[in-house]
Image (cartoon, rainbow, N blue to C red):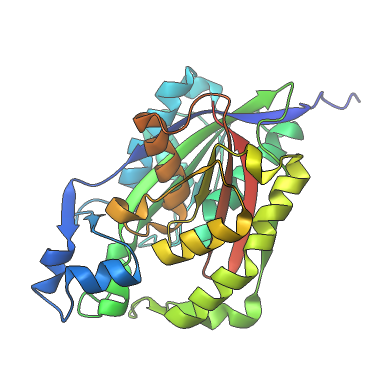
Length: 318
């Protein structure tokens, strides 16, 4: 028996994203609940968000984002042998989203599974894809974060309705002679798992905002720094810092403590809202589209959320 050759590294070939057409502004929300634009922006930094219509699913959005990433990568559907979808908002747990999405994209007989690490899901999935490529379990992996949080929100509750939104982002991962995805730093704080919770299918998402805020602004900057250290990158070398788009105040607090003085800080939340596992690839894809990051740039991704889970890694922009 001969052990198959393994890759020395893995890299991202391309990103893609998708957002629903419907824009919901703060003024729109103020018509149905006790809130206003100033209150929302001062607390979470959001001006508007995208909301999917009733018939548009997590899988629909994943197909759109995944298809764009695949087209941008230069690969065909036949080249992909593993599909991973990061999501925590499926309407039904069976079948998994990855198998459905792969079939709709014309990807034949791939490995296909979902990852639920909530808002850290994309970073978990990207690390898993990198390990699969480097270990010889896959050649090319399509990684997608897709969320429809609007179907799990009480739209009369201003504590959650003003924050969460819908969308999808995707990346194609392949083998590389030199690593383009740094070692992941991941973990969890299960003793605080009740800080963000959906009790059952008849319940809405509940979040203890202050608990999450304190945890995120005190516990996560060491994770970000360690991800840089493991990749052999000083924070001053980062072209961009792309944390989960949870809350603008959290984003800016972590960025200050990280000390990435030369980095563009992703603030996609202002117009996209909090899209959980979709937020990092969505933000990265849009930053590429706007020319805020360029090929060869080093960026730090940092996901964190329900669980409580967290994960970060340095990524080279394709």
